[in-house]
Amino acid sequence: MPKGGIIRMNGISAVLAALRSGGVIAYPTEGVWGLGCDPRNEAAVLRLLVLKQRDVGKGLILIAGNEAQIAPFIDTAALTAARLAEVRASWPGPNTWIVPASAAAPRWITGDHDGIAVRVTAHPQVVALCDGFGGALVSTSANIASEPAPRRREELDPRILAGVDAVGAGETSGRAQPSTIRDARSGAVLR
Image 1 (tube, rainbow, N blue to C red):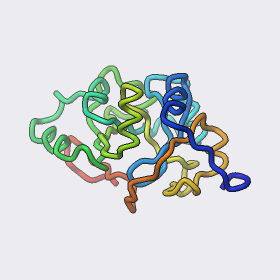
Image 2: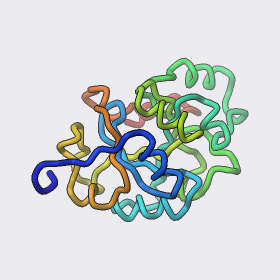
Image 3: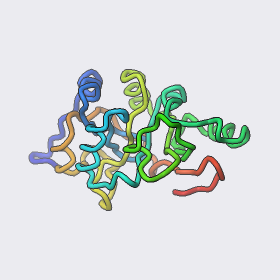
Image 4: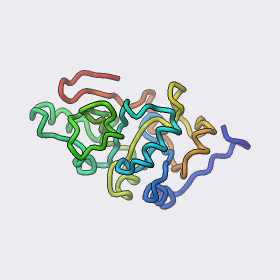
C-alpha cells in the first residue's frame, strides 16, 4: 500500500487524457485490477511492459466495450461460423478469446503469436473507458510479473502506482478469478 494508505484516483476525464497522451493507467476489471494503455502506441505498451516486468513475446490482452472496437485487430474470417458464433455468444462478459490476429495487429501486442487475446467486457467502468477513448485498451493484471494480481484498489503495489499516470475509480466486478481464456480456433480452455 502506498505511504499513508492513500491511493490517488482520477475521474474518467483525467484517465482518458492520460490514455490519449500515451500514458499508462490502472483500472478495475472483472476480477482484478488491470494496467492499460493505447494498444496502437508502441512506446506506451513498452513502458507498461517495463513497469510490469513482462516480456513482450508473451503478448497482451485487449479489452473493449463492443466488438467493433477490437475488429481492426482480429481476423474473424479465419474462424468457422460455429466458432465465431461461440465467441460472440460469450460477450459481453469475462471471456477472453485467442483469435487469429489481423495484419493490423501490432507485434508489441501479439508478441510471438499469430493470434491475439481479446475480450468484450460488461464491466461498466471499462465500457465507459473504451467508449470514451474510442477503442480497445490493453488489459493486463496490475502486478509485477509472477506476483499476485490485486483484487482490490488497496492491494495495488506502490511500484505500480508510481509508474502509472492515472488510477481509475471503481471496483472490480468481484469475480474470484481473472477472465477465462479460450482458443477460438479449437474452443480449448487455456486458463
